[in-house]
Amino acid sequence: MVKNKFVADYQINASKKIVFNYLSTASGLSEWFADDVNINEDKNYIFHFDNEDHHARMVSIRTNMHVKFEFYDPAVPNEEDHSYIEFKLDENELTQTLFIKVIDYSDVYDEEESVAIWDGLINRLKEIIGG
Image (cartoon, rainbow, N blue to C red; front, side, top):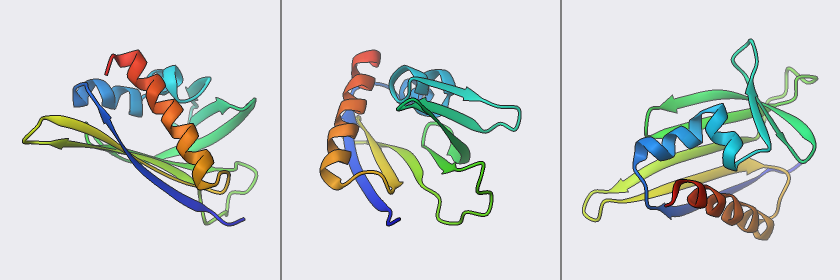
């Protein structure tokens, strides 16, 4: 399947520390991103949404800056072109405005669907943290 890369920036009115907790922990992600998120004994994440489990590895993290999850199929261990989701936090030093950059590389959605999905998810996150 052909994968598409969706990139969008969202302004959020909260501190980096608060926002990063919601982007990088199983408990934080389960509040806004997925129906449930667990970490297995291999430290891999299991995101439950759309009535399915989606397995991911946290492949990159820099505290209060960015986190990247690479999705994989446990039944296909040698798959090479993994879907991923990356969150980057960027603060404008002049205005103290915080932005979340979402990078979603997947084969599931077209641009219009991605915009609708991510707008809804980020709005849910903003409601939770009051930002």
